[in-house]
Length: 190
Image (cartoon, rainbow, N blue to C red; front, side, top):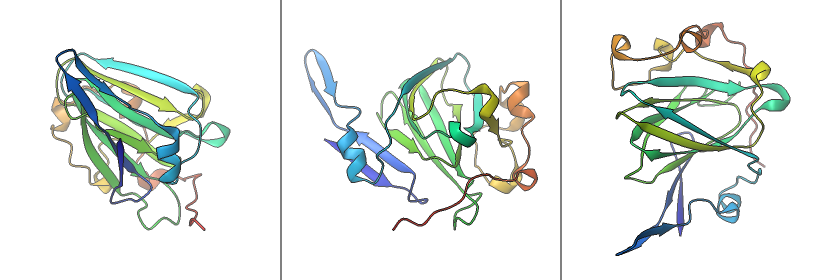
């Protein structure tokens, strides 16, 4: 069984698969298209990505793709733990600029569905954190952009001070939300 719970921004979904264990280990169904469809998400995933971060407090994000390459993501941690953050970038959304943060870990087995029109990133909470995610569009470097992870307007409660965070130059150079003209538009479900 897979439990799916809308978050404070309702299009962001927390997904919690059951695990069935015995002396051999466990079995879990981690993805079921029909369960997501029942929760209102029906796009097919076409690519899997995997990222390993060696150091605690490594930050990746806040990323998204635009245009025809816009992506939704289904994200989980397969080793270690991360604080996964999703930011609403849809113009006209009642939650524009707001975020949802969820701890994902190999131990808690949680996943998060990141809808199209949202920025996504995470901070590793342990050494050797590994993240696996499914996407609905192929990676397209020319369409990738981002928002600055440390923008005070986003009000994200990262569990590390900016000086403790390992972040690459590209992620440190993304614009502030106030300087970003969003191509995404909030659409009310009918």
